[in-house]
Length: 116
Length: 111
Image (cartoon, rainbow over all chains, first blue to last red; front, side, top):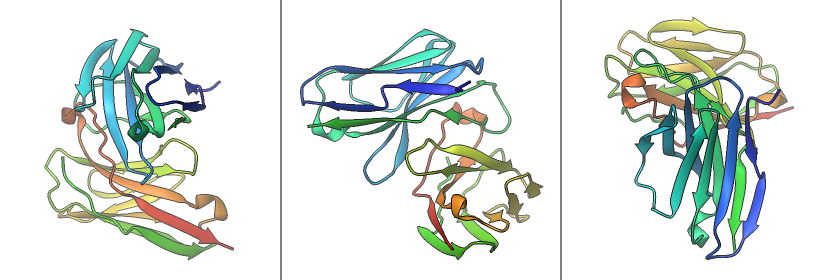
């Protein structure tokens, strides 16, 4: 009954490799997000998709490419991994309603990426 | 998006009430105040949200003065399991629901 799930939970890889992180939500939400939390614990949004359409792209390097095959999935592919990409990546989702208060976002457990 | 300022860390003991204050001097008319909690090795979790006065749920209370330039998250009778980082966020859906997390307040509850 997991609401927002991510795979893998841990990812250790070499510089220059290409890797993907998958995210799935079973909450029926229309909007999904990717956040990055660095070693200093700063949590920053990277991308947001609404109904498979990109709506937020926060000046993330082109090496990061999100893909949303359907509303329930938002995957993150990273090309040519660099040392600075080491962080915890969180996926989140919300209903995506317009107007009013900020909606509650439901976060996944995170994917801990270590680039060696 | 309004910037928020909160204490970097706080210490408490089990059974005490903890109040974490957040400053948001540039809050806009349409902005709401939202608090998230993050346990170690987990994603953030929504705690409470308010616009003005007081909001209470089963987890916490949120006090917002009339000028809305600050807010206080109140955790009644904390337990060890309340040890976490607490984030104060300010904004509305006009910002494309972009949550902007600050540094948060690291709460440590001791026996």
